[in-house]
Picture 1 (tube, rainbow, N blue to C red):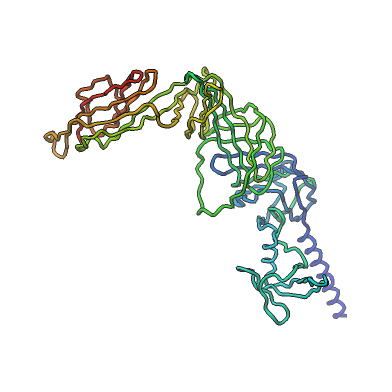
Picture 2: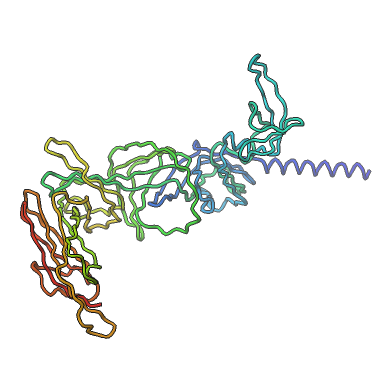
Length: 479
């Protein structure tokens, strides 16, 4: 009797174990077909936040939910999964991010220590033979134990008995959870990921009179995250977001394709210390793709062209050579980011490229510069390069050390000539910027100057067509 009771108990325990195993192994796989809505917020520095809404039938109780078609560069510690139609109904016990994707190499690696079938084909007869082999190692090549011998390399086709449980053909978030709410759930998965980035690119065309330009801005979105984003609501955040950085890891560089989107207006709003740009329509961003969308277009923006000579502050501490020092004359454009000049939107950082047409109507590239984040009503300065027909030279004409005015101080007096030569057929204005260190004062100057800052003297010099002008000044500096 006792023996029969023991057998019955063991049978019941076996049924419980089988039922528990059935519950434990029940898995629901979710793909893009379950996706109801997708929102992606992309930041400047290779960071994005993804909000993925999916409609699923989970049933009740314990479930293993495998969410596929997610970013391969997801930051698992940032994942948040919750129910939209029944908040608080999900209890998550464990989650695993499986980004070890299925490849022949990975499959063989997962079978290290296990048995596979090797199929060989006789090249003369075409007859196939098979034998069992144990995978000993896959480091720097394959080592197999076939029967009583050890072989290296892959001698034929390899047949595997089954797919390893932790190897997927695409990135998968595997979540073990308990559903205490309705069987039909509307879930939202939120996470941060790298592999998504954006940058602003500006294209400007300068008119022949060099007093107006047409400006267009493009947002270039790049996706190397390992998945595609279908019909996503996209927002772009401009600003320097602080992030805790891990040690840098090598990134897999992949080729990108370029897809131009139709020009559409872009809404902008401020958020804390950042600016958010919202695309007015859903977009699809494929993996390994760069897409461009229009941010703004402004025609006839008034612009000022400036020639600039910049000095250095070490001139004023010692005697210089009697020879003239040749200086480059920089060329830059300035325009105001204001509404009344057809702009007035906060401009995110990016590269601006400037073109100008010749008399035949052919556009030529004349320079580019990197813009920083530029707020509304600020001035944009674009350095094009150095002038070809305008040159400058500096010469120190006098230098002397004066008696020390105070203990621990030094006093110097020096004089300079800066000659600006203009080979153009029209007169030009040249701005001379001289950074002067210490406590300084201009004793004498051939042209009016202004104090741009506590350490900067500015002159605005007119140079006649095919002529030259010399700026002479004397300065006293105390350290």
